Amino acid sequence: MRNIIRFFIKLLFNLIQIYHNIINYIILKSNHVVFDETPRIKGIIFLLNQGNIHLGKKVSINSNWISNPIGGGFKSSIVVTEKDAQLSIGNGSGLSNVSIVCSECIEIGRYVRIGGGTKIYDTDFHSLNVGIRVSPLDKGTTAKVKIDDGVYIGGSCTILKGVTIGEQSVVGASSVVTRDIPAFQVWAGVPAKYIRDLTETEKVVDSEKIYEQ
Image (cartoon, rainbow, N blue to C red; front, side):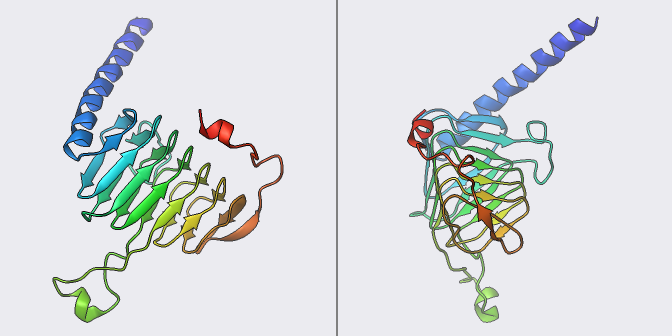
């Protein structure tokens, strides 16, 4: 009896995932997302694209609490707000219940890992001037965000506009990144600060072999 129950539970989850795959494919295509390979998405993504989105190969996105039950978010939300805005996610990168808002340019490199509940914004959303902020013309300033190859960002982080995170660097959970992080370093805190360099055993020098997989 127990094996029969397990069989039907597994069958149910497989049917749900097939349904999700169909819905996500429709969402990607209707939003004119360009992808080199259909991304693996668990759950149903929220996506609104008024600009340009490109996904590389082997991109995976968690968008439900079952696939990543650590808390901090229950769906992945990707919004590109402007006609000329550019969002790209490189080969092998994985995102989990993230929120991305792109109004200018966000580049996420190859084999990047972004933890549950993390937010990435290249915009302030609103003006600091209250006179502008209460008007229909209200718009925040924007600046490009770049996350290089092999970066790991812990859960519930916030990456703010104008930031570059260098290759293979690690950002500790719940950090707020307000300035550039050089390659091969560990940063954490609010705002995020330098903790230490990666050790020789922690960094991969011949990284192209990994990124080209």
